[in-house]
Image (tube, rainbow, N blue to C red; front, side, top):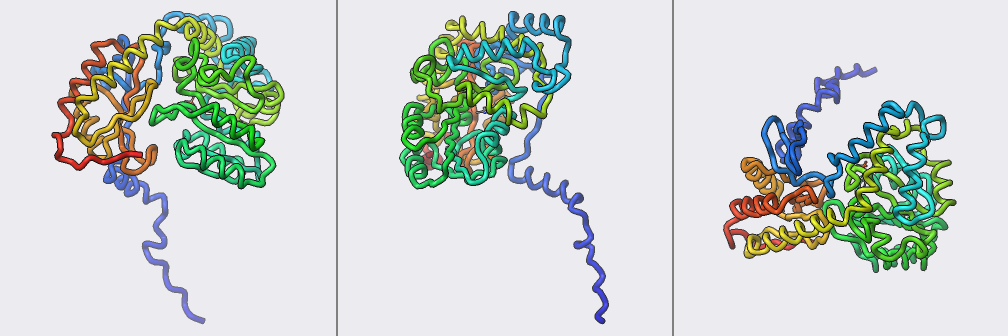
Length: 416
Ligand SMILES: *Cc1c(COP(=O)(O)O)cnc(C)c1O
């Protein structure tokens, strides 16, 4: 019998001891993230670690996160309902405030029925596995938000990824699929690029192949379409023209300025989701105070055409103002008509350096790096808001002009 070799030190080292080195590796690759403790100041200004900063990083596109009417509605909600909901919606957590918000949301997006969740992330990770499972097929745009991807994985359906916005490729995948249940999931406004999906073409493909279409309009809700009713209303596919094969979802943490998410669609689909969505059934219901605040936010969105006009003005100002700054450099502004304006820079280290340069000038724009975006497309994600003044945007343009690379020193690099 051969004696057992004594275990080496490496073999006995616990994997728990590896975390410091793994964190150091993130640092070395410029991938380590840091949180900053913030306090809201006036408009789009924040106090960050004690310093005032002009922020271009919030998804609060209409400035409703600190709106007086919305805040007062939350206070009313606290007085009436207290703080917590106490249980999941199928037990006793479904307050009359949450029920009223669901009715208002459905009415607002002009679809038959809506279901309100405590977060947008939980909405998508929950509803995808409730709709499809093993043996079914899911079709996903390559740039979809992480929670759609996570929901797809949880479903155990086979996942077919198509290149960003490549609808001919999607059509080929749908045609080749023999699955009985097919679900197409896509962001309608892509969160890191700001471009908008071709909704009528997507719906036509889904009709041709008996697929269900799930649209994540987190960045379009409140901003796009008549009265901010979102991308379906913008495409003329809400109300009388609503299709029973479309599910519409959005986060309430963006233009609505609060928190939570919802999904809306036909009565049968929403009833099914209510019965089967684990993240809905096994989680404490969103607090009624928030539902009350979100009802008030919806009211502001509906009446907020001046806010949307203000936002459109800032978008045009930034795009027009940056065009001469970027000319002849390898920096590129993505093709976006929405509040999300990506300034593609390329290398991680350079994107970080520009972010730091802006920070030194009292301006906060986040650098978005892989794995959130594809390798080699690190960018500044400039998020505009109705809370920004013309002077705020002018300050950002001037700072970027100071930080822009000297012309022709880099070979221009093309981004997809
Ligand atoms: C923010 C976001 C979500 C998640 O919503 P939360 O309410 O923040 O959990 C889902 N999809 C997209 C496209 C988002 O941008």
